[in-house]
Length: 602
Image (tube, rainbow, N blue to C red; front, side):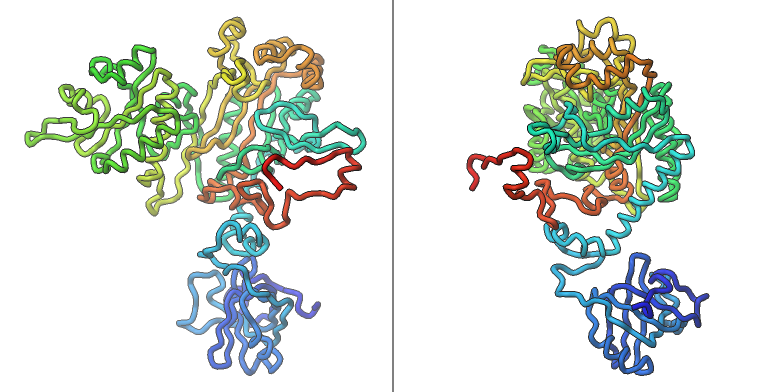
């Protein structure tokens, strides 16, 4: 084996290496036998090199070459030579040379593959996850995992240069309410007691601020037991950052510079020095979401002044109840079929809309604007004013949602806007460089009403700082309180979330009380944090960009499974290793646990 130890990778050799002796190790990507001359495409994670074996390579090498199949792991020793003119491959970096082999050794054979490997592999997700080690061998997946590595490395470079310390926080902690279910770990030494896996390092990074580590970061593993979707996994990674003696603007500016460094270092792209900013209220009102995709505009507009005089009962009833009517102009949408409009209406109703009104903009033979179809009969006398107000032109369609709750009207029409962005390919790159549109969303409500439990609760988490202008009125008007909270949104995904934190123990008690925690309960759950606030804890704030989502978006993917080496499926199962799995009775007995069979299962 020592004789076949590689001297170069399969992506390393060039024409300048002609005449050199080399040993390559890798996997057979393709093998062709052209009348006793074997052309072997040998692949590793660095690239592909063509290896040539013929009768002058020797009988043993020929015999080994004749046995090869795809994905055999082999070693090839020989001499680098330039490929003849007309036989060079400009599509690969090593396309100007080949390795003329004088020795070949099969290091390991490959059983029949469960699916074919390659850039256009048709394998279903279930197979890919079950044989993840094969899936990861594919060049596309290796590029994605390499990008993840590069983003992590660039993050550490930037944070080190900024004077931050990378400090690890525990992964066996006390269970605290943070919005999702905890993963619990039973304690053998304390029967009946449980650790939790951290949903984030939130409490510990605040304690590090109290400890005087004014600049902390960590590429942190986090765990949340929540329903899966494309940009979620039960275990995920975030770039966790906390700083002392800072304002909101300090955190936002640092994050902008971090993103700029990562994109320049890994993709060679220049980002704007300052990202656009929207308040939460502006984002909901204009785009119907707090995660707007700004790669396309399509703003929502108020339609109240026209609706109030329309005689359209659905609109006037909502307005009389204190609600609103929102409108969305879709360029070229007059070509939509009735079926397409009904699909958009069904999508709006998922978000609690009672329906989706519409009308198409057109013009008569004199060029006079008119409205046609749907709700047009209620508005046709004001077609000119309406089209001007909504920037509608002949051939466009105007979509409208109404509700007595303004938020519902905005969110349901915002969902239609997001669907149209995908359906009409408004987010597509159209052959240009991939587009990245960042936006800050700030000034979130600190509290939201939980109608199921009939109480106020933290909209994000309990440790966000209420903006000072609301301190006097927090208890009397919790719903009006805005927090010093901020989200960084990229292409319609929440990329990072953060806030300035509470450092005053009395203010923290007030927030706990509004959220329904008694002094005793707050002390039991958070006493180790609030106790630290009594000993000179500094003002502090932070943010946590999601590493998985960041890499996913940089790579142009739509699922974070593609950028995680060993992800779970949509049921939080590891198909490759079979987790979660039952454990034996002895292990359960050591933990003083007994399992129950859920009703309806066997």
